[in-house]
Amino acid sequence: MVTRFADRRDAGRRLAEALGFLKGRRDLLVLAVPRGGVVVGAEVARALHAPLDVFIARKIGAPGNPELAIGAVAPDGTTVLDEDLVARLGVPESYIRTATMREREEIDRRLRTYRGDRPPLQVEGKTVVLVDDGVATGATTLAAIRALRRQKPRELILAVPVGPPDTVAMLSREVDRAVVLSTPELFYAVGAFYDVFDQTTDQEVIALLREAAEWEQHPEAVS
Image 1 (cartoon, rainbow, N blue to C red):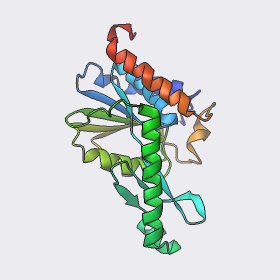
Image 2: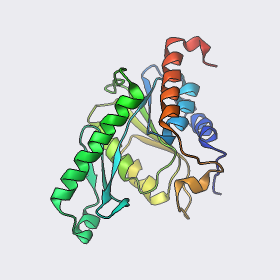
Image 3: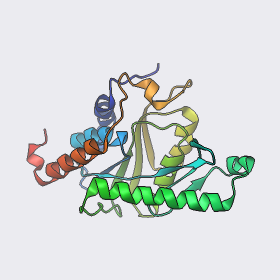
């Protein structure tokens, strides 16, 4: 049976239920992938009484077709490439270098926008839950996972509402545990499994991160 979600908040609440085994863990950290993943991640962080931060990986688009991912890059420069596709399209190394640099600059810009002057939360030694609103090809998620591994978390858990079985299987091999609510065989796009899948704005992301920082300072206010 294919699971549908009313919206990202609904998906986040249902994902939080599936992650209930983590509640009470003192070393817990939720990292959400902007933009839409932050709406999901905020619900998870609130339910688990965990700190919330963002983690951004960016797709590297093909020449002349930016929507076609030939790879992805994470903030620390960790890059994942689809070598077969790169070879098939004849993508030159110079293009990959330039595109990677451009996407890293965009990651830096977004992190400054979202965090302001707040420092990133420390990952080393923590149980990290990486949350998004869904996965499709998994290229950007894989880059994020591998970059996070370099920061030496105690445990790395991928948590997403929906993703195709082959992508979920591939990503599951890269993490300590994967929690995925639905893995439909017929998969067209993440948004196809939501009744409402509108675009999340930068302002919404900033507001959710500010709210999460307030929860951390006043945990008694979190129900």
